[in-house]
Amino acid sequence: MRRKIIIFVIVAVVLVAIGFFAYNFFTTEQVNIKSNSQNAKVSIYTLQNQVVDSKNAPYSTRLKPGIYSVVVTDNQKETRSIFTLKQGTPVDLTLDLVDVKSPKKIAPYSSKYIFADENFLNFIRKDVNQLDRLTFGEKYLKELSQGSYSQAYWANADQAILTDTANKSHYYDFGTISPLGYKITNPGTISFLGDSLAYIEQKVVYIRPTITAAPVVEVPVRFLQPQLSLGPNNQFVVFETGVFVDETEGEEGQAQSELSNATPEIYSGNERLQKQSDALKNYVIDGATWSPDGQKLAFSAGDGIYIMDINTSSIRQLYLSYTTHPQSIKWLDEQTLIYFLDQGIWKITLNETPTWNLLAKVEGSLGWSAPLSLSPSKKEIYYSSDELQSSNDAVYQIDL
Image 1 (cartoon, one colour):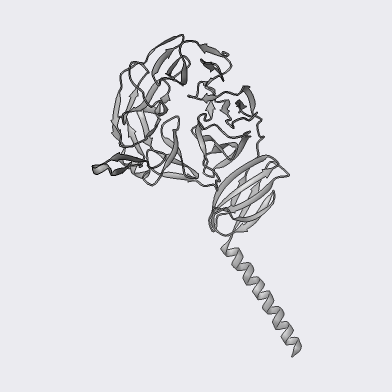
Image 2 (cartoon, rainbow, N blue to C red):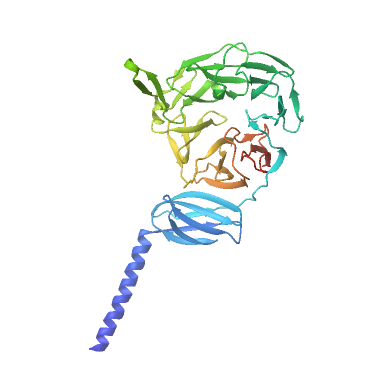
């Protein structure tokens, strides 16, 4: 009798083990992750940033179907990705690590930096009441000795809009400075694309083919504090980085509040694109930039980066568990973005399975008035650090 009981228990244990194995096999799927580093560590996370598993590469395991993020690290090197695991479809990823670049100081501390576009870094030298410009290797510092200028917005290698300490705008044409000829009282809305200029004045978006040309687009907007991003073929997106309150005095001195319409809007010339604008109605955009062909709009909202296909109005979220807001998104090409996040400069490759590579670690914090800037060849990245009273304050260059 005792022998039968022992046999029964053994059979039961074996059947339970087989059942557990079968359940695990048929409710999970295979995941294989390789890397070019023998010392790489692979960590798998849920989208809620909960650790699922962590082990050295090559990584091989079975996971339940779902969406996962993966982080591959080796010392300072780091590559991230995201994958969707479906039943019956195993995932095989190769996530190679790239060398982390060392930023080079190319200019000393300045009281204020302005990275106006992708052709120049412009900054005002500390305690010097004149505007300097720094080109990418072709020229050194060249002084604009006329006037007391506070900001510069470059259209191309030779032309710019300058604002002075009295908030008046001027036209700079390589060697000469003259009155602009029209008002730009909010130069922070200026957006250049090639020679084309877009800006917002008195809640109207203007687009000019060149700085001196007459407007070809005039569109009134409803926002209280609008921002603007210009794309190819006079496309643009106008948005606010939040909902602002405009308080005015009503009857008997009672304050009245007006909430702005913070829904972003997309235009093609003077025409509002209804379908594309409606797709953005649930987003509060922090910044936006157009792909070189104008077919995609990359924007940051909250703690994520999103890509809109302009033709289909579909929006793709690039999932990652961010701890801070991404800043200064730029297109390297039609399938590659760079941006700043968590004291690092990152590159995203927009494949079916997107990958993130850490390009460089940043000393201090990126200046809010000085976003990432690309050289015309897109082989160098420039930025400034703005920690007050820090020896890290400078203009930096990273070679791609």
